[in-house]
Image (cartoon, rainbow, N blue to C red):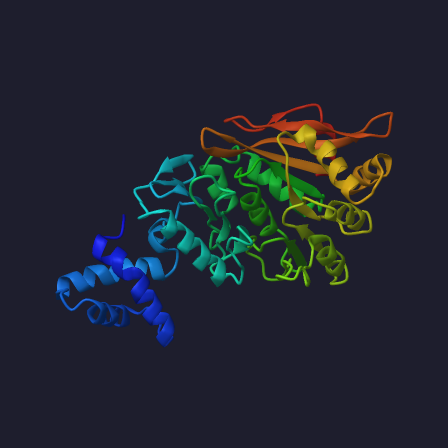
Length: 382
């Protein structure tokens, strides 16, 4: 889908005239400006050009139809003729085209502006949440080679249910009941996995299982979790302004959340010094806390947390002592041929040296979870 040549030539003029007049790009106003700019266009041409111009001036431009599809999770733009879409089954080329790299840059800058962020040569990247909840990331040349790169991650209007996750193959047949028991037992857990493995999706579903009389306090870098629960309080970080002042980091918000009487304390993504604050909180009576963490394998979680703890100045031995007392379960997700599944459930075990390691308790199979040597500890806790 590309702009026709008359629309391409008129786009800048129409945008400038609408901006100067302070007008919204309604179909009527766009058509009126088109006629003012080109008196040779007939009614049919004006209508066609108006539709295409509005697609660049409103929403996510030519990407909007993709974002509107119910099963789309990600839309990625690598160049004018390289638009990719993920409908939950892996990436495929989309039938969308941009006129040139300038059109991609213009769209990225407009989307960034709607999120209150700056995107230009002085600040050539942005990570933001759009008003509809869509997560946006963009990088401009020369950092991005050849063309601006734009990534859009769709936030579902509602979390998936356990039954839907089971039908999609994310959970084995007996997985839903086990997760219900885990939440109601108030075990502290981390949902781990690689990028796009479904960590936030699973976490939002699990938060919906929390009893209605409990208060959930969410702390996120970019607000994405939308659990179906009657008592949720969300806190979101704030980037620094152009002078480098006014930024609010995740660990700062987490300390505020501890004073808000949370029954369940949730960190949307643990990726910095806030790891230490979270472990400390889970050691001070905040049972049932949880979050997500990027990790290639469940057994890598202690090492990942060890590295994050070092960022906060926490010695290795102290980190492992905190970890052993704070965390109970690791739910590890993987992507297999485009599909997402809960591959393993691990428990934590402390060895003779005082270091924590993960022990597999359950492994995914199509017939149900296969119990492993950590099941005795997990089953006893449930």
